Length: 234
Image (cartoon, rainbow, N blue to C red; front, side, top):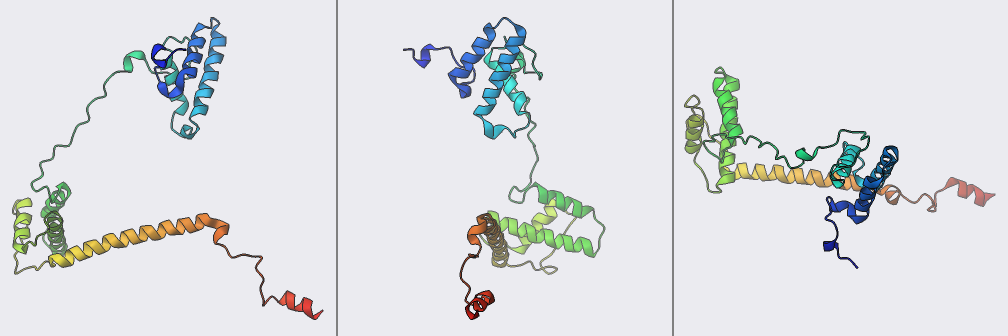
């Protein structure tokens, strides 16, 4: 009896020893057409091992790549796809560029900085004033989510001016922001509302999936059935 440690190392252990033996046998077939038919049969067996992956894009192409890998790229057949090459197998992918944004205050985030920058470019008017008020309220909410302690409106207005490079300015006598508790209550209320709506949708789908289980029994006797009364009279 041979242990697995004494056997040839599997290139792709997911397919098992039997599939690897089939590939090794395919390599020994001299006739090219017969070898190609054998390879197609192996591909069909490999696909049947993972039926849940049939909907994956390029599933067949992936199987042919795996067959080439298991044969150590020595299988000389007419491949229906351009399979991966041996030198491409261990090539490291290129590093993705990591965004290096200089965020002034991390608890506010980069998006709010961009919004403040756009607001500072707008012409003065009612629309700009309303947007600045909304941004100040959002800054206060972000600050409270980061730091649960209360915060003065003056601190928020100072950060707003700094983030806008002193192009936007508010004073406590100009605007009174919502209290911290009220802001947190609205924020938590919206979150609870979203959770409740998601739960209702899930229950609705579950009830629809139940089908006939949730439907009333059609064979249940109805005491007010007029046909039954007529039958008694007759």
